[in-house]
Amino acid sequence: MYTDINFKTKAALKAAVAGGDTVYTHQPGGMFAPTRNGRITLEGPHYPQPHKWYAQAVVKEGVIVPGSIK
Image (tube, rainbow, N blue to C red; front, side, top):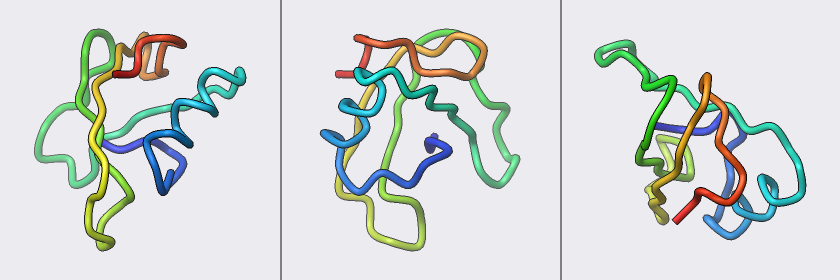
C-alpha cells in the first residue's frame, strides 16, 4: 500500500503523522481491496521510483493512526 503523499523516507512519514498530519492510504491498481481498518504494510517512495523503505502501521477508516508506524 501507498500513502496519499509520496514520502521519500520512512522518517518523513513518521514525522508527518506524529506532527498531526492526516495521512491517507490507498492500494493502486485496484487488484486488491484496500484495508480500511487494521494493520497494513506500506512502501515508498511511489512507483516508478524504486522502493527504499517499508513500514507497518495501523489504519482506521484508511487513515494512519498516530504512534502505530513501525
